[in-house]
Image (cartoon, rainbow, N blue to C red; front, side, top):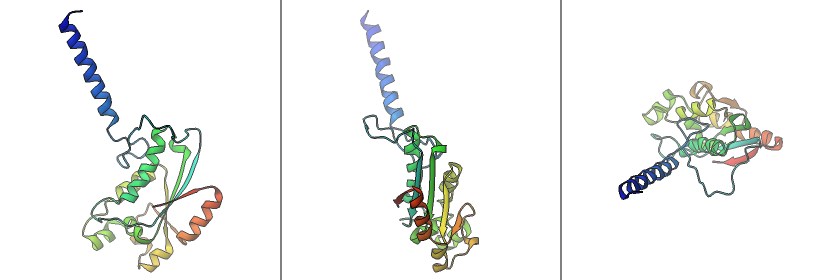
Length: 182
């Protein structure tokens, strides 16, 4: 093989390796489209089992650090979904419920309510919709709503109103849901 051909083959191989490496470094969104970007970790030996059904209830009580940006905690629910999806867990195997209360309650308000409070449209609603499209169910704590003077019309319509976060959590944990606190 002549030197020019070897150099061309080496360059092509190097380009292919670079492209594969670059592709692996881009965020992926297997279950929740456009939110909760995650990355493949080829060296990971512990991964979700694609043969299991996952029952998860998220206790979401932490508010957004910056109300003008998507709450990292709301986006983390999308990450949770996508991490399982990247490991081969199908959407129908993910049974995720989110109970919103405390400081997180304002992430679940309508654009109108959010705008009157923070002078910006609610950036979290796009994430909530993408999560709902991926099969996630949402409940907002009725007690937190009352304590903050919110009514059903103040809450994004994709969310159900629960009697309380406490009773919702104590209903689903005994049913085998793993509770995560965000």
